[in-house]
Image (cartoon, rainbow, N blue to C red; front, side):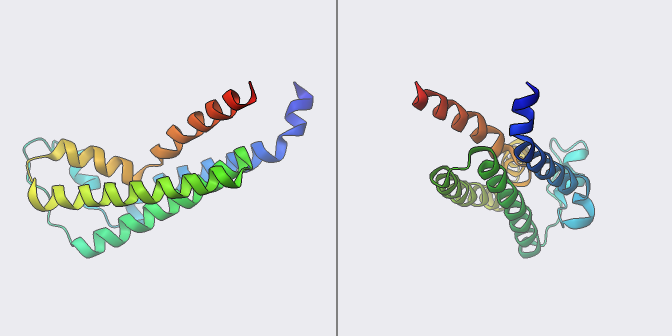
Length: 148
């Protein structure tokens, strides 16, 4: 066990640093990013109208946060798997989810003001690194099945 730890200590250390960066982004979210929905979703938002939003500023801040999470996610995937094909595939997946999630987010804001739960979940996937939590076990499972 100790030998395995010594063998993978750089991978473990780098992974911990990346996860701490995710935590830092979350901890500093109110001071780093413009997002009026942070307070909106902390309150009793069911049936409440959406807050007034500077759409361009919100888009830029969501894009910045999504980009930070994506870069950290790609770094974590590379550290864990050391496979450029997996890294490229993950990059394409993040691009696809960026297009889908941002489109859904702004469609909901513009046309579905009564869909606060839909906005809540779409926004959650934009601002949190949930996708990497889905990708890591999937890639691990795939690699384990390829070895059989």
